[in-house]
Image 1 (cartoon, rainbow, N blue to C red):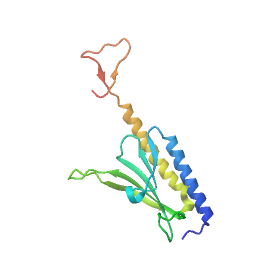
Image 2: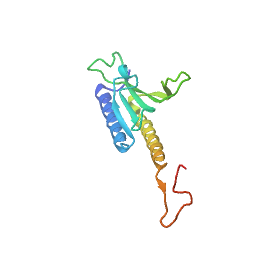
Image 3: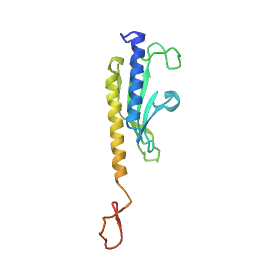
Image 4: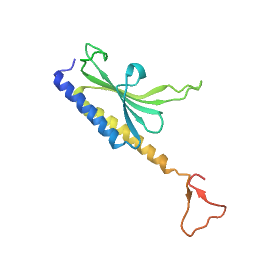
Length: 154
């Protein structure tokens, strides 16, 4: 059980949610924040996804003491996090596989925000690199290319 009061626990949760919303806004071109039901979707209460497909995700699930998430009066006493990716299996199935995971106490919510920020920044950087690979013709004014126009990928 956490040594923090219920009020302090609620403040930490509010700060965590606010921080996650800021991260999603900062990287909104390539990342979005989903509020999910972990029982139905199996990820977490707060899940960061890349805008382009659902190959990876960063999930955060609230943990409770002496109750479960169905209790309307529940207060998170810690959070678990899980960085996941879909991995193709020999049978063609692509289940979610945990790449890294952990648990964070409410007093350390800033650490969890740091992990979420790192995930979002990496996702953003990878998306930016992918966008840089263009199939548009590379042209230079006044320069003709023998054999037609070339693209970055050809």
